[in-house]
Amino acid sequence: MNKSLEKAQDVFLSGINKICRKFGLNNIMAQLYAVLYLSGKPLSLDDMVERLKISKGSASVNIRALERYGVVLKIWVKGSRKDYYEAEENISRVIMDRIKSIAERSIADVDKMINYSKRALEAVVSEGSGEAEEVKIFKQRLDKLNGLHAKAKASFNLLNSSLVNGILNRSVSKEKTVVLK
Image (cartoon, rainbow, N blue to C red; front, side):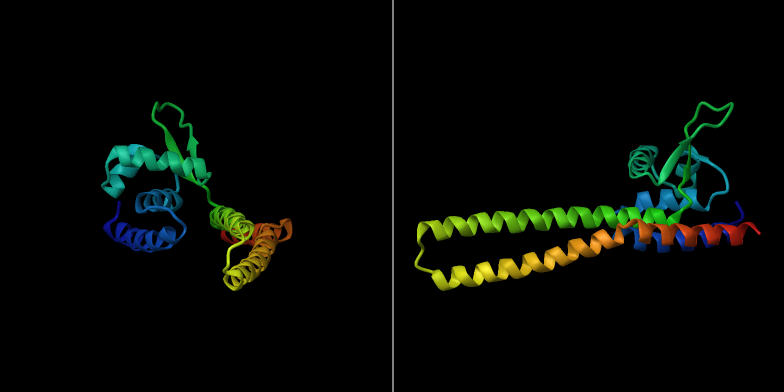
C-alpha cells in the first residue's frame, strides 16, 4: 500500500477510534470496522492483522463481535478457504443501530432502578417508619424521575420510528446516488 494512503487511513483510524469508544466499541473493533469500511474489496483476517499490526486472536474475537452487531459481513471468496469480511456501508444505519442499542439498555436499567426503588420505598412505608417527610420527598423525586424517564422513552420511540429511519435511509441513498454518478 502507498505510504501516503496508509498515513491518510491512519488519520481516519485514529479519529474513528475516538468516535467508536463513545458508542461502546473498543479500539480493535473500531479499527477492524474502519479498515473494512475503507477497503474496496473483502479482506481476510490475515489482511486485517497485517494492516493493523494486531494479534490474530484479538482480531478474530473482535470481528465475531462486529458480526453479531451486524456491521461486518462474512463473504465467500471463490477459490479461497479463508474467511473474508466486508463492512456494512450504510454508516447511518450502523450508527443508529448502535445508538438504539445503547438507549434500549439504558432505558431498561432506569426502569429496573425505578421499580426496585419504589418497592424498597413501599417496604419502608409498610413498616410505618417515623420518617414520613423523607419518605414523601423520596416518593416525589421517584415520581419526577419516572416522568422524565417516560419522556426519554417517548423520545427514543420517536427516534426509533419508521419515519425517522425512512428519512435516514433516503439521505444515505441520495449520497450513494451522488457518488455513483
